[in-house]
Length: 295
Image (cartoon, rainbow, N blue to C red; front, side, top):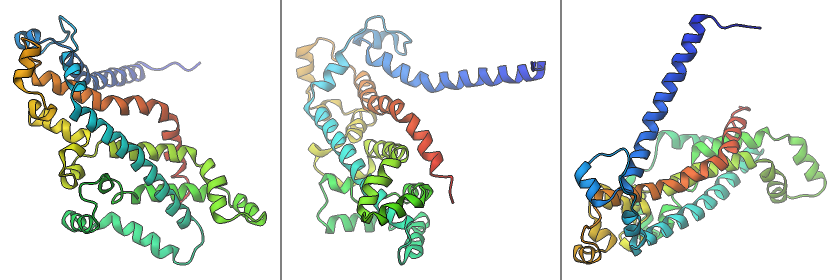
């Protein structure tokens, strides 16, 4: 039986301690936000930074969930995330499958995909195109322009190329069309890769902020991240949630501090992705690794 030397044990112990400290450093901000979001008005003003609230209250969460603009922003973000991720997967996987096959001009199209890694149209030309196509103030402005990621497309293409060609040849002999092969054979075998990149796309759409600032002039269509900016960065709680100071005072002699509302809103915005990741983690790791096997 192999026994570790003192130096190896010391090294392993140092790595464990380092990982624990790193984990604590990463977890503490979330813990701090959780504690502040549940702190009462008096405790927050009197104690400032606290590690454990003396009284657990739901005033901050009640304030944001009673706000129609906040609820509406969640609905907008869910729509953009679900529809956008679906469109992204359909467009990316379709183009990736075409480029994985021996079609005329494949090298040229592959070169054009790689070209976008080095050069892009820029913010102003992109805005002018979106405006000319009538997508301003619509959710499609957040979905269509980035529906195909060049990086994701290349990885998925490599994944498709790793699927044995004998399966496609057998299906062609049986009279199946390319669309039938793609839907019935390729996609079912690509679930790990599709799950991995659906998470990539979903996180990207859920965190959409700058594009929403550029293309959504109507505040009723703002996504969750834009509302968070108004709450946390700008500190504009009353106007963002459409709650007047007088209404808050009438409801509660001690109005909820903007800081606790901001912390609660950040946690609500972060929780869905944190809860989604564990269910896709297995497919996530497998899909990314399989997509990089064959060059």
